[in-house]
Amino acid sequence: MQTSTTGYRCIPLPTDEIERLRRAPRDDFGNGLEPLEASGPCRHCLRYALPGERLVLAAYSPFDRSNAYRETGPVFMHADGCAPFAGEGLPPAFAEKPLALRGYDAEQTIARAEIVVDGTAHARVAALLADPAIAFVHARSFTHGCYLFRIERE
Picture (cartoon, rainbow, N blue to C red):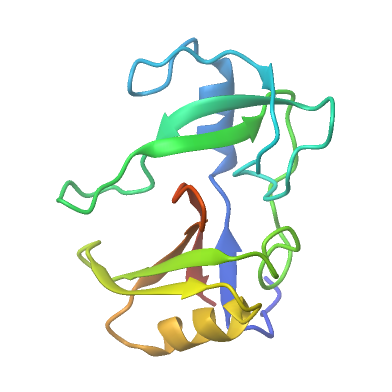
């Protein structure tokens, strides 16, 4: 595996999870999964859908522990498949966008949060991950609060 020059990696929803949801008639919370034309970011390739691309909207929780911070929310994924994000640093679709960054500790509780509206997301991610109390960071939509992707130290 190539080492990142950023010191962190952005992790999309896993391919096996995406494929499972694409094939399922319902998500894990009972919501029907129907392809639709919508504008939104796919949580697998980490880019916004182009006009005419179909997305599936599902409820998803990126946590594996049950606690008061365990959120479930809407996520889009390409209905017809896509390659997972494998780039370095922040995905281009999000590098300059306003983001909510939430740093979680090993118990998956929020240790620190940042709102980025000035194009400094890379520096803010690096600062969050420099804190030993933070195990990982979630990037979330600034406007809707939806989960986008996970960020871990390299």
